[in-house]
Length: 199
Image 1 (cartoon, rainbow, N blue to C red):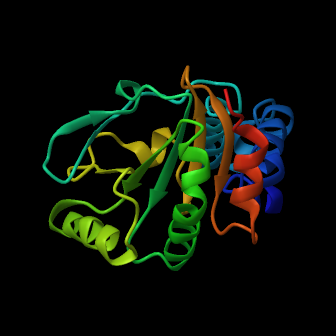
Image 2 (cartoon, rainbow, N blue to C red; image 1 turned 180 degrees about the vertical axis):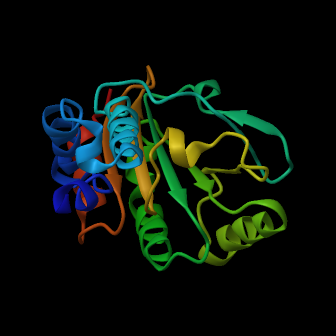
């Protein structure tokens, strides 16, 4: 039970894959009353959701909106590499990671990287997203999107339990890496260097 509570939130070191394994091996085959029916279904559904987002799978295409309320979709972007960053303007880890990403971005922009930031604020609070972009002086080449009405349910579909969360996609929208939460020093730079190659 301790492991089932601890590891599904982290994709670091593929801990969420271990969670899926534990659920498949020890939770699903057991009597629902052992965990409680509600808990059994929660773990089973969460494992199914994580399994859909493993490295090598497609990231589902969802609808978002830019600052001008124009509709945007991930699959509309053509690029050899797309980094999706889920964030909030009041998240201290985001305030550290997004500026750090902006410093190394020029190197990978030259290799075809596009960056899409998806802000989690809704309704009237979505204005804080665009204000946060200006305050952090993030690159104008990035795409800044949000889901003001919460219609995409991206937190559930993309398993965004902690922020920042990031997915790197290849040109076919397959997941090359996934990472959630606060990153170690230089971890993002290491991941980008490992996965992004000049064509």
